[in-house]
Image (tube, rainbow, N blue to C red; front, side):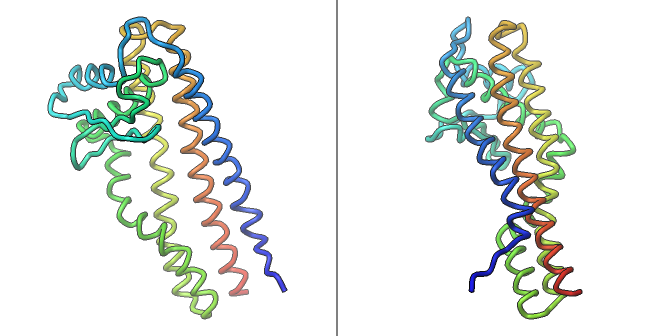
Length: 227
């Protein structure tokens, strides 16, 4: 006899489908605007360097990393890492992504509150993402309600992390657009950059909904078992 997890179907599968669409959308949008070069021939590296220097962050290095859209800011190493498809590209898509990552470096230097909160939640979220669901389910199987609630509490940190990620990412994109507008990109070029950044923003919203769906599933399962 097969067991059907209706709560997974109800709470988790819809946001997972949204996440899959958002991932495909950001890739297709980036691919489209990676073919549009900016008027000054500015590379992703150039854009990030200009923004960092403008904010006095001369000590923040920029490194090239392999992969596609693997760009990120590493606060521990104080390094902006740009992917192969961004580092030396002169497309409006690459410039936007690079500017976005430079925006994270500026946030870190300014001790932007949501970024500080995200950093403090991260260790617990890492534990919750791997152990939270299993502890909650194990508690249900063993009829140990306390264990289930510990698992739920740990996984709640994942939801909090994804929630606080939204203002961090949205703010970095706003900083990127403000830095590029007029000075480095024309209005028409900036439209493509904005579309890439908006597509990326949808992936973070989808990630939050997936985490929230999993949390609701766990809470519902535990409560129904208790009843």
